[in-house]
Amino acid sequence: MAALQTAPQVQTIPLVDPAATEALAATFAARLAPGDIIALTGDLGAGKTVFARALIRSLGRACGIDIEHVPSPTFTLVQLYELSDFTLYHFDLYRLEEPEEVWEIGIEDAFAGGVSVIEWAERIEHLLPMQHIRIDLAFGSDETARIATVTGLETKLATGPETT
Image (cartoon, rainbow, N blue to C red; front, side, top):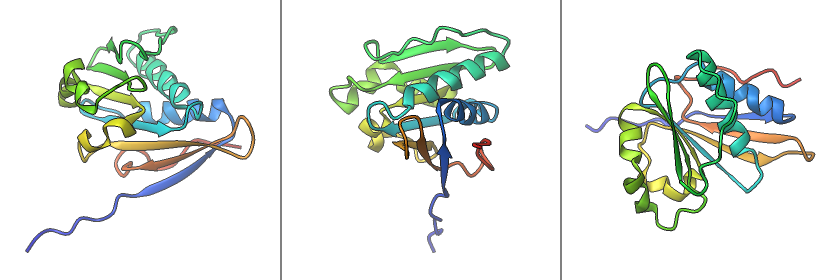
């Protein structure tokens, strides 16, 4: 008899401003380990880069590294950060022409032993391992508010940040 798969847990987290998005990223950063994948999706301007930069800075601080400048890898597609325990891969797939191009930029290595944060992950949805955390960022009720819908977080995040 085949094992039954349960549907992944989905959590919706209101983010009142960019600081709340950064706090959520820091919460995730504290729980990440080699092999973890954060797949960020959402419209242009929804907060993917804000989240990615905050996550990268938080991971750097945890390793005693000050990563103040976090360039967007829009043109190079990937930016690597050598941290003490693992390599952090920051992918920005906005300019990706064909999904299979990700194999040419080392995504397989990232999935094998690094931590990956992927902006525009919907462009390679069918290539992502089943075990990943997906964060869909959407515009909220005003110009600074966002809504994060998180899937696959069962082992990484019990609750969201304070958003009051």
